[in-house]
Image (tube, rainbow, N blue to C red; front, top):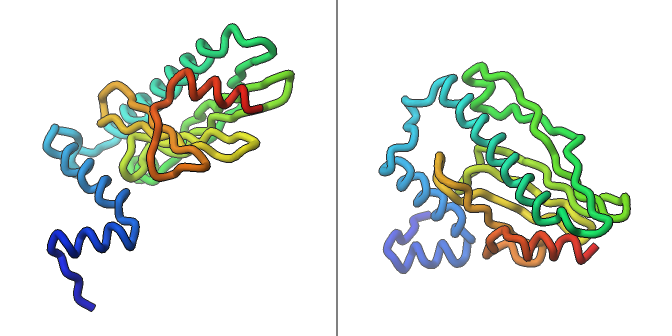
Length: 179
């Protein structure tokens, strides 16, 4: 089978095979190389440790932001008592120890209404992924910022996986109020 790689052919593939995220990932990869992010030969144990520390710092900052937004809400409590293990392929390859990553649970009237569960640091097209698990479905949160830059959290709702919204206080309040 031969593919037409003209603009028309790529448009057809993109439209019919849903290659949008793949093409976006390639674009992000090429941009990161031009901006000086680590190339494959620059990756070593210290780089992996640095990325894991950065991921934990970004998660902590996000959790603090969520806690701050919900601070004044009646009958709402945020807890970080559970953890997930981060031990991805690059960590194993470069002999970096696994890490406990906190999970943020949001309680309303002593019942969990939302859980922020980190899924992974190294994901295609993003700088980390978190799932927000709720009774109404799972929200996918990704950091679309380039490595080393201020996080740009985007949320893909259960009803709309194609276009993300910025993670902001109104979305956090929407999660709490729907419960």
